[in-house]
Length: 392
Ligand SMILES: Cc1cc2nc3c(=O)[nH]c(=O)nc-3n(C[C@H](O)[C@H](O)[C@H](O)COP(=O)(O)OP(=O)(O)OC[C@H]3O[C@@H](n4cnc5c(N)ncnc54)[C@H](O)[C@@H]3O)c2cc1C
Image (cartoon, rainbow, N blue to C red; front, top):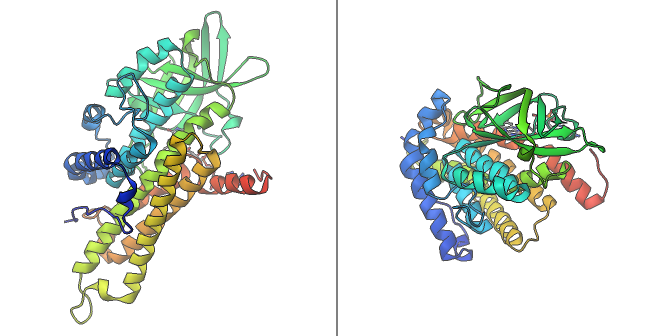
C-alpha cells in the first residue's frame, strides 16, 4: 500500500533554491526512496536501526555535511537543511542518526578540537567507518543540563570520568562518545571529552520499549572510573555554552527535518483523500471538512519552509542567533505533529496501520518535540528574548 511521495511546493518555493540546493534535495530524496522506504516499516516494527545504510550514507556525503575539508561535503546551510528534510521524510530516526553524527559529534570536534583530534576523527566519522554519540542528558537532568553530576577528575596526564548519561542516541553503536562533564578546575566548569567506548568502565545499555524513534538506537551510558588521556579533552570547550552551541547546530537541522515528516503525512493524506470514497460515491477530498485540514497543512508547511529557508540564509551569513533557531525548531516540530494528527484522521482506520507512514511519523515527532530542548523550553527562550526576562 502507501503512495509514492510527490513532494510539496505550493508557492514555487523551489524558485528560491539554487541548482546545487535542488541537486542535494533530489539526490537525498532518491537515496531515501530507494534504500529506506522499502525497509523502514519493518525496521520500525522490529525496533531496529538500519545499520546497513551507514556506509552508503557516508559515500553520499551525509555526515558533517557543512564541514570544509576532512573528506566532508562542504555544503551550505540550506543544502544541509534540505538534506535533513529528505532524511526525515523517510524517518525521524535516520535523520536523528545523521544529526548526532554531524551536529553533535563532528561539529564539536571541528569547533572545539585540537588538530590531532580533528585529523584522527573527522575523516573516519565522515565515511561512517566510526560512529559517535553525544552525552549531555542525565537521568535527573534533562531540560536543565547545567545541573549534571558527571565528573572528570584530573589525575596526572589522565582524566577519570564518573557519571551516568541517559537517552543517548547511537549510544551502544558509537565508537566515540562526546561526554560533557564538570571538572575539578576552579572555578568549576563544564568541558567536553572524547571517550572511546571500549575504555574499561564504560558501558552502554539500550532503552527498550520505546514507542517512538523505534528505528533509532537510544541508550543509557555508565562511566565508572573511566580513564582517558588528558589529550582527549576538547580544548576549546568551556562552560554550558559549548554543548549549547552543538545543540544549535542540531536544532537547525531539526527545523528542516520536521518539514520532511510533515510533507510525508500531508502528501499521503492528499493522495488518500482523492482515492477514498464515502457518501454518494464521492472522494472524501470533496468534503469541506477534509479540505479544511489539507488547506491548513499545506499553509503551515509552506510557512515552515520559508522560516527554515530564511534561517538557513541567515546562518550562511553568520547572522542566525540561538533564539531564531528556537523559533524554527519549536514552530516546525509543532506544525509537523499537528499535520501528522490531521493526516492520521483523514486516513480513518487506515491511519493507524503501518501500510502508511503517518502513525510512525506521529510517534517519532513526539520525541522530536521533546529532545533538543522541549517545545516549552523553546517557548521560554523566545519569551526571554523578547522580554529580556528569564522565566526559567
Ligand atoms: C529518543 C530520544 C533521543 C535523545 N537523544 C539524546 C542524545 O543523543 N543526547 C542527549 O544528551 N540527550 C538526548 N535526549 C534527551 C533529551 O534532550 C531530553 O529528553 C530533553 O532535554 C528533555 O529532558 P527530560 O526528558 O529530562 O524532560 P524534563 O526536563 O524533565 O522535562 C519534562 C517536562 O517539564 C517541562 N519543563 C522542564 N523545566 C521547565 C521549566 N523551567 N518551565 C516549564 N516547563 C519546564 C518540559 O518542557 C517537559 O514538558 C534524547 C531524548 C529522546 C526522547
